[in-house]
Each structure stands twice: as structure tokens, then as C-alpha cells.
Length: 502
Image (cartoon, rainbow, N blue to C red; front, top):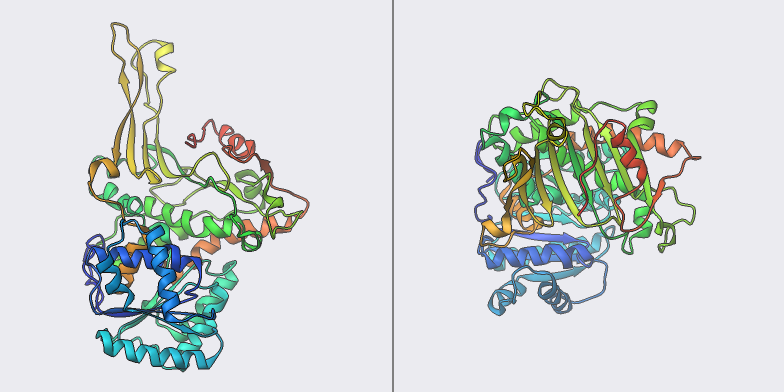
């Protein structure tokens, strides 16, 4: 059963019995993320014992070979080390493999036979979770085959249930996203669709709502009266890492802005929901996306900087004259009562100085300096609340303090909270939380159809303007830098500066 309205999404109970089918099971996502996540959940005893996994892909291999590959993956990528032989033995006997293509009906017939066997063997109650770890273009074919083979239940049946997890990107623009949603809607009820964004599964992203709505010192200040601007940074220290063909067709805006950054932004600034039930929270996220000010051609010229790291065109399977951005910085606004006039500064890029994802809420300076000396007043800095999403998960608050001594000298100090220091417990990988939520039927941390489309409504004009301007090239930046200097100029133009990437 799905969680009742008002049930806190942060309270994750044990999963219900189910069978998980992974399409594209021979890929990296299964090895690096999905199977290690499931193993970790089994170690913590939050997955029901009535559980099994079937991997489905076109790769020629037997179930024994598949299990051996996954065991190596668990030993390499699981956060729970060393691997517990008893837990693994219990897990591997629940794993099977079926070879088949996404188009071939025979593969789905073989899959159905294996599902029938495992449902009987492990008592999963007929509940089925299908994970499409595949390119989005394969999703319509897979869904229609599942429907034709009778593997998807009618959405009106609460038990047994069938749900589908879909990986991004959900289209390439607004039109393609709407078409994909239409096709998915022909097969599935929206309540059965779980569009995954692993950023929303990160512990510190979930903590945004608790920080805001669980502390009276923050929420009264969370508006245009007290906040000067908000920065969201997602910096990666690596390049495209062998994904040149995919990345050259996608670019940083489709890969990161439309999904991760806008989801984080909407959580950060949304209005108070009436409860922590899934649709109450998602309704408020949608309101933010609807309120994002659409950019015209002149706005894009003023407020958006595209960049590309210098070695990008030398990557394998990348066009030698590619205009694909690997970096973007942009200034946007939210047209509603709470945030009118507050700039939101977003930046994301590859091959930057360090791996760092954070939200920085920069408060307005004091309205009047009482200290009577220009040298003191000029050193007053703004308060900054920073939510560190990765790698050093935590929160810090920068405040102004008098420095020790007889003279009046002020400086900034930081009050720091680190998850690793505060809690003697490893932080779960995002996929652990998201897989568990999908098994439980809690869609809070998954994107709804209208969320996806409203995000594309904001992003598509930016993409179209860039793709039409064929005479423009992204600003180049050195690998290991903070990005193109044009991004710094974007901030300096408004007498502000980016936080340092460290």
C-alpha cells in the first residue's frame, strides 16, 4: 500500500514484498549503483525477505555469470565493507538473468516465465517493480511489450501492484518530453510512474525541507526581505569520462540544469506544504517551476554564460568543432510574492577545480553600520547559510563576530555541522533511498509529469536560442579552473561574486 496522506516521507519503513526487474541490466548503472544499493539495504534489513531480482538485457550470459559480475561489483562499490558472505549468499540466490532484446516478444515471454517461478519461490505477492536502466528512447517499446505480455497490472489495483522507474533525460525539449509523457500515459497511470533524479535521494537534499520547516530561525527569513541572492553550484572535477557520444548530443543544460539543478532549486524555495505527503510536496515544487521567469533572446544574452573545457573536443566520439557546452552559469528569477526580485545564480560544469555541490543562501547586509569607522564597516560581510550536498555533506552558517583584542575589529566565523561528525552512521547512497521509496510506493522524491514539463518550459528557450546561434561558441576554460571568466563577469556586473569552488 502507498503511504497515507500526511505520512512523513523521511520515515522509511521496510519495503513491501516485490520482484524487481532491471532492463539494461548489463550496464554500469546496475553494477555501480543498483545492486550495491540493494545489498546495503539487505544488510540493514529494510528490504523484505520476500524479494527477488531479474536482470534483463541482450548480453549473452547465464544467471551464474551475471551473479559473479554482481558480486565483484558489490565488493568494489558497496559502502558496506567487508562484504558479509551470509548476506551475499542470501541475495545471490534471489538473482536471475534473462537474455532478450527490448523489441523481441520471445524475450518477454521468457521473462514472464521466470517471473512466475520467482514469484512462487520467494512469495513476492505479485508486486512488480520495473527499472528502466536504459536510454529513454527504449522506454516506449519496453512499456508496450510489458503491457502486451500482461506483466503490468491495471492501475486501479492496489495489491498486487506494478510500478516503473524511469531514468533521465525525459526528452530533449518540451515537445519530446510531452510526447514521451503521452506514450507513458497510454500504458501507465501517473501513480505507477517513478521518474528518478538521484539528486533528490541525497541526504542533504532531503534535509533542505527539515532545515527550513523544522527551525523557526530560518523560515521567517526565507524571503526577498532578508535574502540577497541564492547560489546553486554543481561542480564536477572529471570530464565526460568515455561518454563523449552521449554528452555531445546532450550537453550540460539537458544533462544537469533541466533535472538536478531545477529540482534542488524548487525544494529550496518552495512554499510550505500542508503535509509531507508526496503530492503535497510535489505540488509546491511545481508551483516554483511554473513561477520561473521565462527568458527571451535578450535575457539569454545577458543572463546565461556557456562554457566548454579546453580538452573537450579531443575526447573520444566528440565532434572536433563541437559547440556543446560543458559548463553553464545563469541568472534567473522567480515571479511570486516571496521571491520577487531575488536573483538565483546557477552554475554547473565539468572538469572544474573540485567536486562540489552546494546551495548558498546569501543574506542581505545590515541596513546600517553602527560601528562608526569606515574601515570596520567596509569589512562587514553578508551572512551565508551553505547546504553542502557533496562531497562533505553538511551545513555551515557564516556570521560576523568581533575579533579578540582591545580595538574594534570584526571578522567572519563559521558555525559548521558535518553529517560524518555528528552521526556515527554512514550516509546512504541516493539510490538506496530511492529504490526503497519506490518499493514502498512513496513518490515524494520522484518527478511528476507536470514537474518535468514545466522544467522543460523554462529550459527549452535557452537551448533553442543557443542552437540557433551557430556563429557563437562557448567560452573556453582550463581544466581544473573555476570555469570561464565570463561567468565571473556575470556576477561582477551585479556587484556579487561566486563562492569559491574548493
